[in-house]
Amino acid sequence: MNNMNQMMKQVKKMQEQMMKAQEELGTKIIEGTAGGGVVTCTVNGHKKVQSITIKPEAVDPDDVEMLQDLVLTAVNDAMTKAEEIANKDMGKFTGGMNIPGLF
Image 1: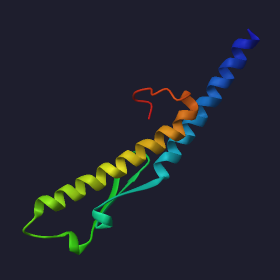
Image 2: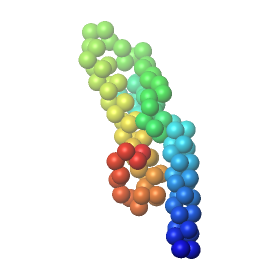
Image 3: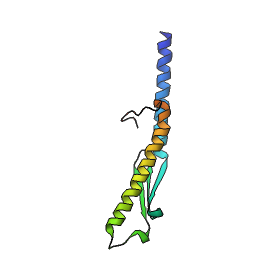
Image 4: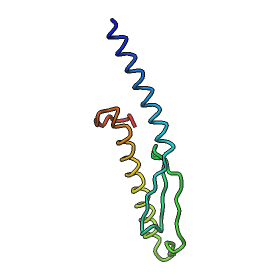
């Protein structure tokens, strides 16, 4: 019975550590860019877009599709980096297993 209590304490401690790590992810800011930095997207560790910055030289009224592609590329770059950071930070709790919905 003592082993069960000890195990439950360890599980509770790990849950608390995971929750803290999850909170800390939300404070991390990750930047993705496209077009050599003419479009920048920042997201937090929870993969929520925080801002998109477009330099004036990226805006060509005759080529809106290019700007759309740059924005999409910058957002995807930021999201990929955020995913990598989340996997690295949370992977220490899951032993590298990818558990859907965990983070």
